[in-house]
Amino acid sequence: MRATTVLKNLIAVTSIFVRGFEFNASGLILDVRPTWCRPRCSQCQRRGSTYDTRPPRLWRHLGLGRLRIWLRYAPRRCRCKHCGLVRAEHVPWAMPNSGFTDAFEELCAYLTQITDKTSVTKVLGIDWRTVGVIVRRVVDRKLDPSRLEGLRCIGVDEFSYRKRHRYLTIIVDHDRRRVVWTGEGKGKAALKRFFAEIGPEACQRLETVTMDMSAGYRRAVLDHAPQAVIVFDRFHVQKLAGDALDKVRRQVVRELSGTDLAKAVKQSRWPLLKNAEDTKEKDGRKLSEIERDYKPLYRAYLLKEMLRKVLSRKQPWRARRELRAWIGWAARSRLEPYKKLGRTIRKHFEGIMAYIELGLTNGPVEGFNAKSRMIARRAYGYHSAHAQAAMIMLCCGGILLAPALP
Image (cartoon, one colour):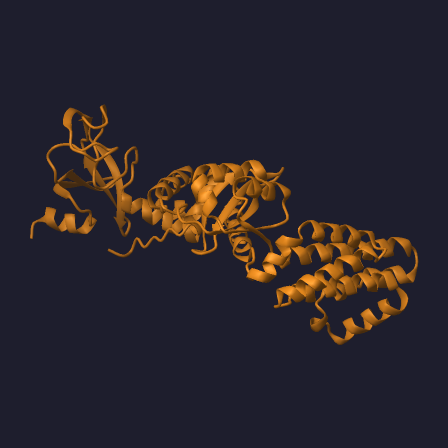
């Protein structure tokens, strides 16, 4: 078998001829060319006529151990009749304007999925910024172009990628469990851009949208997809109830300031926030003391527990009746934080009931949000929303890379 044939099998690139090779200080350099004679347009990949030939250039390929492998070729410029322009020639081993082969870029992106960029630069011997450029190219090439088609049930959430209120809006497809869109900013303006991108017909096909109680997201959905059912899941509702309970506790501590009782109430935070079935014996003693000595605080605890039980109901008709009763109890509780929570629940009543009726939560969206947070912390943060969005789509957008497989 000829050496050029061995080298062609080694680099595992189709539609390529290896014409020769040489070793130098940079590694192994292979002289290659495409199998076709007439140049092809890098945009539409149709055949054209040769306009001129550029000087030879190098593309970095996957290495063999410590040996770096480079592909060398003098690319032509193609006069494309279809595009009507003179463009660079399409080569089967790399994307236009890239100094790396497709196989090398996929390996780089795969390593970036599982570790930080600094470690990737040490393994592959490339610059930190180059890793980001490669990630964006791989995302553009590998991301499913039909990901925004057939959307039926989506989840919306914001992600803070940088301090001083720098946000990304993340859209998750509940059916396929993947991130399908990211956009800079949050609220109505950000979600409006998503609806504009998918078009009015796709907006009309949306059936369900899960979200937190953001007024901006809610208005955007009502404006562009009024037929979609808005779902507020129990996590956000119970979080508001826990916050209201904590406000009542702090208010009691302020009223008892300077006394031994204030310290006892201050140390009761976790027994109060625990679910009733998770309390231990010492927590039960603390709750008994609160019931005996601090009636308003114990009333707030009972309101929190009753709301949790209502949200656990399986029969929508029963949950609807009990939730209305809870709102009335909160209004008469003489506890301002719970009065405010009651007004909030009354305003979002149908969205909360949709959670009970459909059993759909924003949990997958919160999970992708946590994974995005891990990605940002792994890189010690991103200065650019585009860089963070590219990493989110690479790791959470359903892109599967297996560079070790043929």
